[in-house]
Length: 251
Image (cartoon, rainbow, N blue to C red; front, side, top):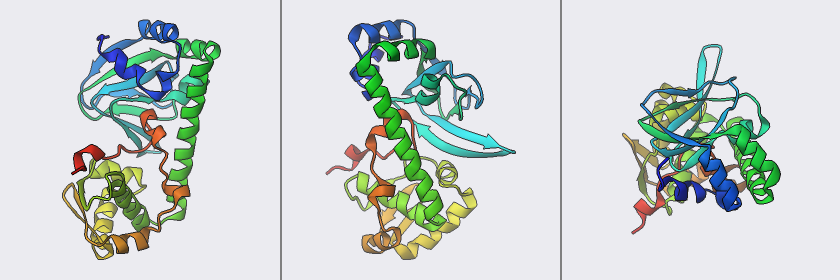
């Protein structure tokens, strides 16, 4: 592991409150590894041997059943996955694969659990992160069950604009195929839905989103804090899709 990796990991909310000696002991037993694009890192159902920390690149978390797949999240630096299985010592419920060349830190789950039992500040951080993840998953489930596909897409596009400071135009932070899968749609359905949203105040040209009538878009989405959040603390835990970089849109 590189010396300059440690400050980035330590800065994560999960590790900030941990006693320094425990953090150093945990990092001594962890190791860094580089992975090529398209590599399967974990399979659903496998034992959760490691907590993964993404330092470079990006990782897709996905699930499969009966020949079908869906994107659960896309993890970008600096973020962790999958904490719940590691603390619970339970099988992974999701699989993971690299979307591009990536560098990760692998933290042994057994050591993570030991420190969880003896470091109260770390235990609180774990509980906080798991609570944030739970709330985000509930929000996602509510959106999938209560909104139709057009409303889900419009909600996602509007939220990204708000996160960037209500900008009128921005670039999608993920590929459309991943966005479609995350929103419970096929890429073809997403394309058709995007075309219908032009009359509702938003246009997508390639990867660029252009808000043409915010009032119309708001009327369609009807933003709800109990569905749309935000719960930004869940982002470092690899839950959901990456947010756009707000700093890039500040004037």
